Amino acid sequence: MEHRFQINLSGLIDLLSNHLYTRPDVFVRELLQNGVDAIAARNRLGPSHEGSIQISLEGEGVVVFSDNGVGLTEDEMHRFLAVIGESSKRGDWLGSPQDYIGQFGIGLLACFIVAEEIELTSRSAQHPDAPSLRWRGRPDGTYDIERLDEPAPVGSQVRLVAKPDARRLFKFDPLLAAARHYGAILPFPVHLREGERTERVNDANPAGRFPWDASHLPRSARRDHWLEWGRRTLDEDLLDAIELRSDTGGVDGVAFVLARAPGFTRKSRHRVYLKRMLLSDSVENLLPPWAFFVQCIVNCQDLRPTAARHSFHEDASLQQTQQELGQCLRRYLLDLSRNDPERLQRLMTHHHLALKALALEDDEFFELFAPWFPLQANFGWTTLQHVLSRKRQIRVTRTVDEFRQIAQIAAAQGMDVVNGGYTYDADLMARLQELKPEIPVLFVQPSDIGQQLAGLGQEQEALHATFLASATAVLEPFSCLPRLKLFEPADLPTLYIANREATNARVVAASAEEADDLWRDVLTQIGDEEPTPSELCFNLANPLVRRLASHADATVVQRIVQVLYVQALLMGHHPLGSAELNAMSEGLSGLLEWSLMSAGSGATTWH
Image (cartoon, rainbow, N blue to C red; front, top):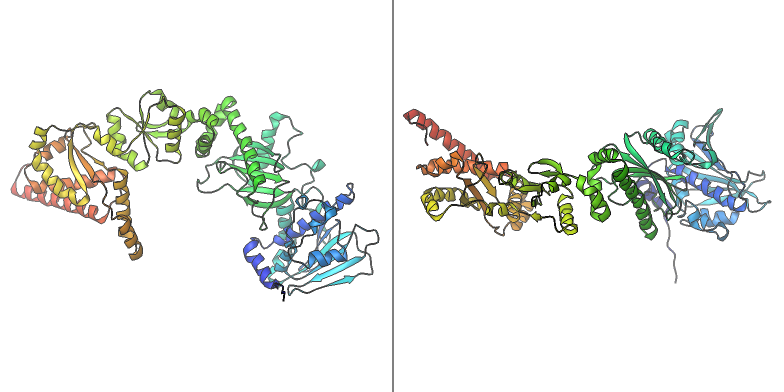
């Protein structure tokens, strides 16, 4: 025996209100949308029809949405209002569903979020003698249809009586704000009325132009028009405005360049209208991922929305639209690089991350913009162009910590080092290496620099064997080996050198100390593999180290080695665990005790 699924309408309404819809006034959007689609359907019967929507407040907590659209027949009421998921925009004579905003057949249910009953009065425009009908639906899934004796206007009127907790939404100012939020750029008149008070909801733009439309202005005046309108609409300080067009998605709008750097992890959110009805003011998937330096206001004609109306379906049409809109932004940036370098520099100040991301995707863009990208080198903040002009081998670190370890000593050795640890910089230097192999780019670790430091001969090593033995006793528990070197700058007593694996092991160990029991076990297992020992290079060009290496008191030597070891870690911005902190405390306490004993015995300063 065949059985049919049953639908719990109350449960479905709860699902819509708590999960699909994010605003309590979403019923305004759904009713405006139904009116817009009804007018579009009537225009297929007679293109000269002038559509309009009126929202009326009729007493406390009662609102009526009226449109002069196509209306509904009794058969259509049974088919489209009583069947969840069945949309009235799917009739053969109505054309493609893509010609309409609503396509899912669930919009009217939003009214049950704020009202216990939906009353719809309608008269169809398809037949001159069509009857006037009244449909009443309830959230328990029951409905009835009544034929009216008095003829109703062609179109539809939806009457809602607010639930007690929704009455605050059924007042003039909240309704006006919601209607303007969703319907500000609709092409036909939308009015809100209460008694003698009437307000127009949408702008009365001539010839149905979008409010950002500047085609009637000289090209030289369009940017100022967009910026003035954008600042007023977005309440943002803006650097520039870019016209956006896409044939695939039927997109028309403006991208505004923000006068602030957005958070890198935060996606850009755009105000998007679908067939002039607000889809969402937080659409994230309209532009390519690298375009997070702009905020857009656009209208789309041909993209498919999701049921929640927060974004578009990820289909081939959207992908092509993203590419076309990305090309609009590329053309703008390339034009700036050739014709307006001052404006480009202002944009680069705030949005170099977005431009770096684009440069990694587009070789032409890389050629034009890479020379101006800001980089950190061991001789200060600079540009790639300046680094190249020095005509030296360019050494690049992959992390900020590695750069900090070697920046000072590499500068003293006459080496140029670029910090590739900031977002995109290592990838940009690798791309430079691919596109221009003649430019000497070398990725380095601190150990590479350490190998280039001048060591001591066997005889000198033997002279300092006692010091090395004392230093080894201190450093061995930290998986670190002492080395004696000669290097500049002479005022740097030590240099801590660790490869990437050793650095990661230190981070894991420090994290394990602070973790709870569960994560401590996990992190301990991760860090079980013994990394290559790190090195602490003692600089014999430094006066303190020279005196230390020849000092006879092994206890004093070990205390100073403890302090120098932790100091080297701090200079390299390495995490300190409890063992390192204890070593620092023990070293300082020992030195203070030794100083007091020396002072009490009248001993002179050691040398």
